[in-house]
Image (cartoon, rainbow, N blue to C red):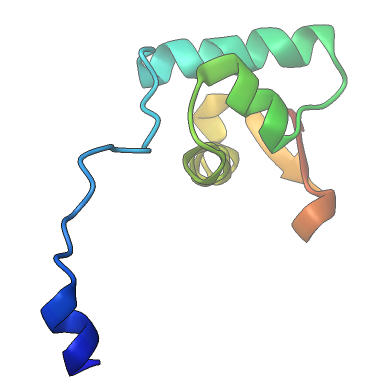
Amino acid sequence: IKDTRRKCTLERGGVSRLKKSKLTLEERIQKARDFLQKNMFMRVPDYVRLTGLSQTTASQELRKLALDPSSGITSRGQRSQKYYVLR
C-alpha cells in the first residue's frame, strides 16, 4: 500500500451526481396529485420522472408525504411492492 501511495497521486472528482429538482415541494406535491388523479397509483420511478429527483430522494420524499395527512397521498403495499395513492 505504501509503495502504491508513493507512485500515485489521488484527487477528488469535481462532478456532483446529486440531482436536485427545480420545482418547489408544493409544486412536486401538486404534480403527484395530478398524476394520481389520472392514474390509479404511482410508484417511485413515476415520481422520479415527474420531479427530476434522484431515486433515493424521491423515495424518501414520498415516504414523508405518505405520513403527512395534509398531503393527500398515502402508501399501500410493502417494500418493492409499495405504491402511492390518493387518500
